[in-house]
Length: 93
Image (cartoon, rainbow, N blue to C red; front, side, top):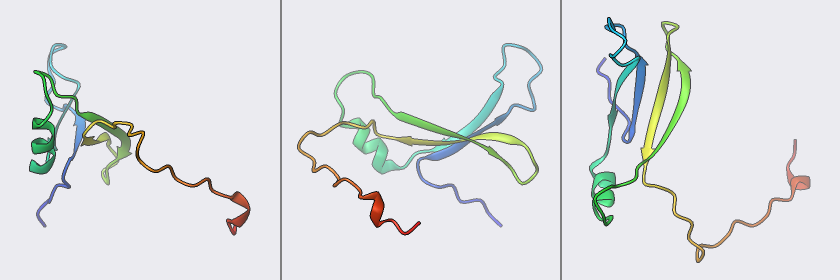
C-alpha cells in the first residue's frame, strides 16, 4: 500500500540517525499544496508568514511524533459575519 500525503500536512519524527549534538532532534517532511503556495506568493514583502500547527501523536509502532499542518495566517475580517451564540439548553446531552 502506497502512502498518499494529505495536502498541507506533514510530520516530525525522532532523528534515528543523529550522532552529534549539532544534528536535529527531529526530522520530517511537509507536503504543501500549490494552491496555498500561490495564495502566499500574492503577499507583499520579502518574508511570507505561514501558520504552523502541531499535534503530539503515537504511531502504530508506539513511537511518538508530531503531526503538522500549515495554512495561510488567520486574518481577522471585521466585515465577516459573526456566528450566532449557541444556546446550551438546546443541546440534548
